[in-house]
Image (cartoon, rainbow, N blue to C red):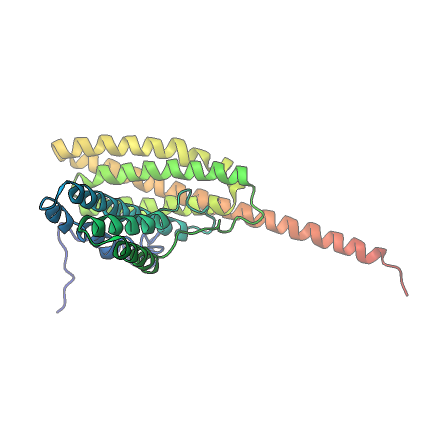
Length: 296
């Protein structure tokens, strides 16, 4: 008879069954900053070996090329991560600094220096630089150049929401880092479910910045307290393995998840109520206008 495998590092039975709220993988997407971006850090490393067999000018140019290519690799990865964050939101500003475009230019500059360092000549260096910059742009694309979903949105309110959500995301990241130090996969999965509920609220507030006032305590005070409690729990659990502390912490996550989900539902209900009021007002205006129309 088939038997479900279970162990220390396996999720608890039923925690990922349909209906168990919320599904922490619901909005997950593969990150663009994967093997291709990481390979860019490895590709220019042979230049470091070749540089020290050259004359002084060749050494300087080759090392400059190596530095430019490594900086381009870092900017490419950061640009891909920024684009992931941009794509994950319905309303988003374009990145303040076009990292991938800068990476393409640095790739061309790095190749120019590298070819010049090997006495390849200006023409060859220029050809390699142009090809490298163009191929990098084709391989990784350009940065988002326009704001998304900002039509008719109050810019001041949207900036306030962006700052609040950014601060809240920092609190969630600190909680994840603290729990990872415990090495407990079940705790990580439990925290991920709470984070999914918190991010549902973030997306709701981003969709309607007017909800920020009602959600500010959750994005600020409650998450700050949750971060501090998580850090303290991780320190205690690593030292003592106290199971009672673990149960208390799991109960805290349960309360937080329940309250965040309830507040999110309330925000959505308020939005629906506002919509219904606007519809009724419009209908009343249309009825009054229809009564005023002269009869033929």
